[in-house]
Image (cartoon, rainbow, N blue to C red; front, side, top):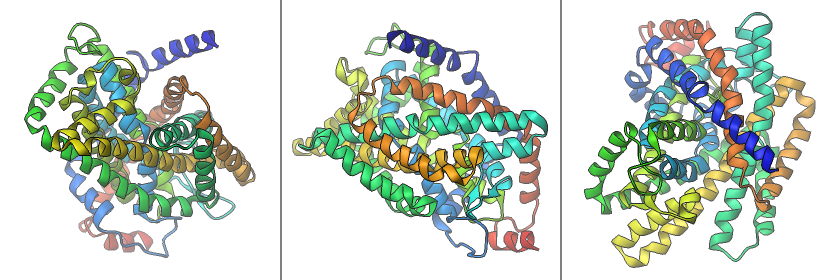
Length: 474
């Protein structure tokens, strides 16, 4: 086992090292950002309006769930352990500068997410049950001619179906179990059984059931968690500006992981920022295109704008809140167990911040983080169950959907009671293996992305979704 872990560590260091995925993520994101003329910044207000304010849907449009539910499903799959434990670990290992590189991943990742969603809707197909299937496996196969596209599509689907059990299942169910058992007298098997039953009922209901639960649960939990972080930052307001200055300077100088300024180095900050950033928002993985393809829409560009707000909310808002709370309270300089447990580091930071406001609120901070991690991890399970299922549909059709769901549900229970110390390592590898074929495909399909985008925004009434829908339907 030790040899396997050592080999996995070597593979992970290569994939996430300075010569493979990190430069590829950056190059693809910057390339799309330039080709799309900073669309993720200039069109962000309209995109947020579409995503959060205007929810009118045309029931006659093909799709399984509303665009808001598609966004919520994507958020459900991404706002999880990575936002609380993963972001904290990035700061603990790579220093405060890791947050800067997570911002970079988030900003250029918005262009990547936009592109994935656009292609996901454009190349989606209807399966044997009448449900929409889309994502990298489809736009790679149908968008890139010849054997290369098919090979890339199959590779993504295989990696995605397998990765769903790690990044989207084992780490998440284990996180739920850890958090609940820490604040209640329940045994892990009790938590695991309850989680398996509840999640199983939602997963077996398919994407419509997942969309309904995600759209109701995810926004509430994000607001509550971000609200708690804002209270802590308000208490420590004087430390915010120095924290931001430290983030920027440390990004280009590097610090020690445990409070000194003599060790981690720039590369470690970049590596942690990029790996944890993509683990958090999944821009580049292609999963956002799977969720977007289920949306009721005729306009790939419109859904793409909605989808790119997921990366903004996930990284620029939620991850930033987590990291700033940790930095302003000094929790990032912790040693021992807190340094190794990201959720414990975040919990300590929130508890300390609220305790400074009132000593009686310190335990409340611990409960808020525990519940947030549990809920975020639960909803991540739901989103990734759908992602893995769509990969199976691509590979083998509808006949394996039910068996896949049942195995996925069984792994939820196993993950909740097992020791998963190495799961983060294997999850990083799985993320990388999924991202590689997708990023190659985005480069090759960039002319399609640019053409669709230009055609949409050249319409004189593009701000009116109803007018666009009428023209496209003719």
